[in-house]
Length: 70
Image 1 (cartoon, rainbow, N blue to C red):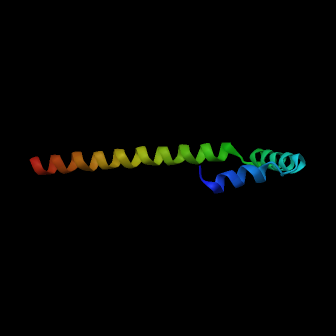
Image 2: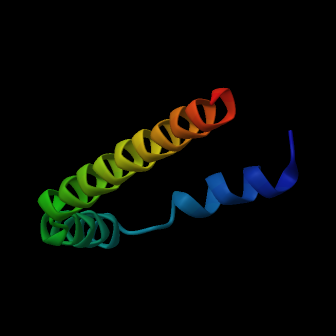
Image 3: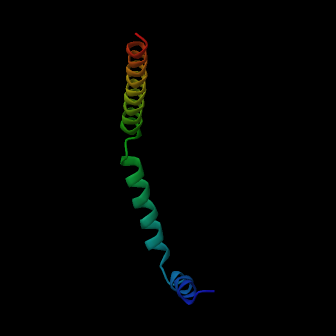
């Protein structure tokens, strides 16, 4: 086993419970402040744009085939 990990485990025993509780509370506050609706909206907009680009590329390909066959 790597000695560094053993030292981390031993050092973790000396961390006061209050410090861990405060860190957990801070993580909870940060996660509550993140607005997932805006993330979902942005992902949806990107998905719609990707579909539009794919449809445009497909249409251009069809038009090129029609021109080449004429």
